[in-house]
Image 1 (cartoon, helix red, strand yellow):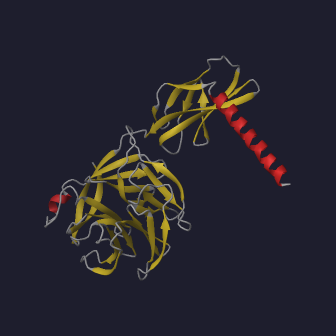
Image 2 (tube, one colour):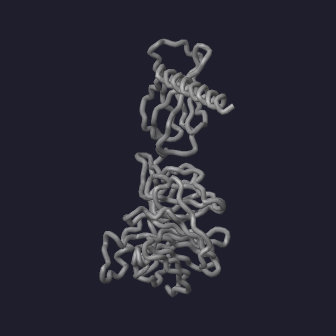
Image 3 (spheres, rainbow, N blue to C red):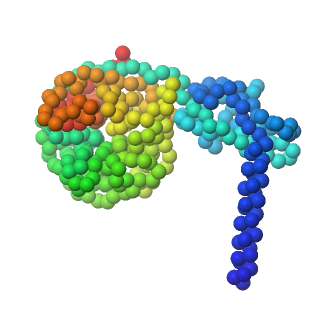
Length: 349
């Protein structure tokens, strides 16, 4: 009986190998010819199939991310919901069979980001030894996570006075990163440890930890009321199931000119992800569905209002930390080891 099972497995394996070889041979019959491999959302672009063996093609259909894209008069319409680096796939029907062939393309945003500036509503004191990585309001209280080894912490603060109401210090080997609050829990990332932590909102007691999936590192964290949203230092922003902490998909951040990879601290507001640009005095406004960077807020000049202190570095102690106050309808921003926090309105230029 065991011998029969082994023979059956061998036969099945050979069949799969033959099937794979056949598919590869079929794929080599055709290639996709496209006018440009850098295109824009909703753009129409000419596309055709190279057919060197002059096979009798009866039908061609194109798809991206498993979704068929409209094709007529020799053109596809790039009406796809998510942008970035994509694989365009063609299914070519010929001689009562079919073959798949693919090519890499880059689908960018349809328009340039709009430019925004800010007006300061209030200034508040902030701990100049808080290397800010995450900010989030909950019931009027500001929660903050800080980074650096031997300095990383989770804090509950009075934003008006800067007083730390409660603080949990992390192990000295850990570099703390972004936080978000969901279902009476605080989720906190670490940078390179590939581990996140879960805390009880009421008393900051540690409940559990979780491991990252495909994402590279832990940077910023927010949520849209259904999913956790995580940046990892690449062009990808990941969506996590808040119950399982499994990464269930991602978007890529793009402008009308390029794929962009510097999203840091995150805040979600009304379908948009506000993301600090790593080491820059600016914040991106990202469409949370498509990944298109629809706006850029220039926060230039805020660092001039901050008191420099011993060990303060202009290249390291940069703008980072953004939180939306839903009752006041304003944003709060600060920086790493800044002694001030700013309440601002964001205004289109």
